Amino acid sequence: MKLYLSLLIAMAGAIGPIATAHAGSIENMERERAVAIEQMLDPAMSAQQRWERMNFTKRRMADLERITLNDKSLQSSRKPSVLRAFKDYELSFLVHAATESQKPVMVHWLETMGLTTSDLMNARVSR
Image (cartoon, rainbow, N blue to C red; front, side, top):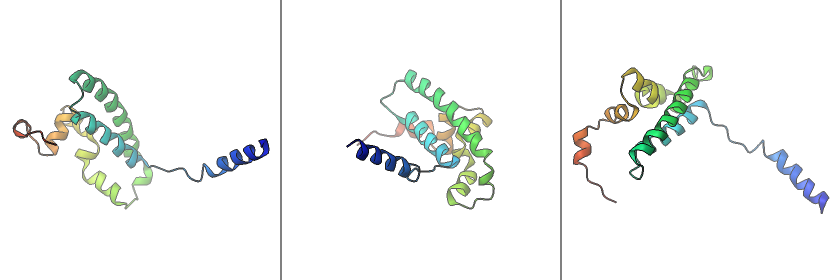
C-alpha cells in the first residue's frame, strides 16, 4: 500500500510540471484589469470598500503594466492580443494612461469608453 501511494505521488509530481499553464505578461495584466473594472462597477460595494480595493488593485496593475511595457519578448510579437493591447493603450495600460491624463482610473476608463455622467444618470437598472 505504501509503495502504491509513493508511486502515485511520484507520478503526479512528474506530470504536474507538464500540465501547468503559462500566462504571459499581457494576459496577467488583462486579468488584473478585468478585476479592477469589475470592482469599479460592483453595486454591492460601498464607496469605502471600493476605494480600499482600488488602491490595492491600482498598485498591482501599475506593476503588471510596467512588466508588460518592459517585456522584450513582446517587441517582435505579432499575436493579436499584443497588437491590440498596444493599439488601445488608453484601455490596456489603464493606470499609466489615467496618470498621464491626471484623472482617477474610473473616470479615465468611463470617458475612454464614451460614457458621460448624464449617460450614467439616464441609465436604468434592469435584470
